[in-house]
Image (cartoon, rainbow, N blue to C red; front, side, top):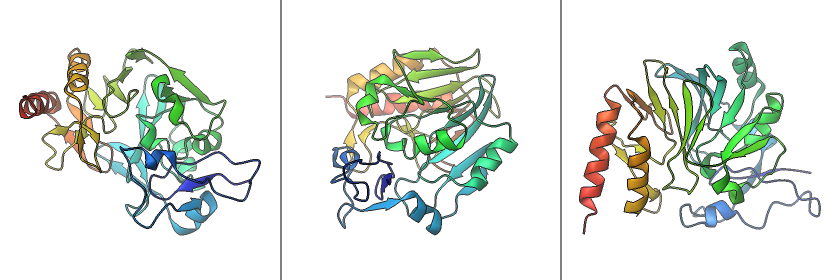
Length: 271
């Protein structure tokens, strides 16, 4: 049986016992109004085909090891290795797993757990978990329905905050998805660090963040969700924000940049 991958969003689906050689009829992630079906129609690939075409990029991204696929496949997010007091955390996932990447992570002490911000980045999370020894995958329970490849390794958490250690806290910031999660890390590469997926997406000027329900379809986030996010983050200081992809980061002054972005957004959408 084969676990097919959507070529537009990179989500890996569970194998079908009834049709082990056929891809799913549709990608529910792409059919959602936050995403889109590729302009050439729904297309599928396999992990083996992906491995034959691409090599993972393993590079430093402002002090953290990043792992990502070339930008012409699916959503160009990259995963990050976070060496925290809660153990090594793999933040986010990508669609391809390679022996080279697994060896690089093991050489740095292995991975304690995988944490993912939202369903667009679930990618091949089960494949990664199994390659790293069956480690747990932490997802917010509000997004449980978006899991396309269930696994015993997935652990769902609830509420707005989950403390993993004295330095690491998961925050359900919501907005983009109901369970959209940010990770606050008190002792990042240069100090307190926020990793928000794309619930707060670092803008191209790297001096602001954006708040969108759908980025590709240009649907703004509801003001009530932005107010929730603003209130939740009010108690957390941070110097840096690491965005969803390579070098889309705000290094230094990130708390002030995020505060200014909240004010700018809420002012712009005020009736």
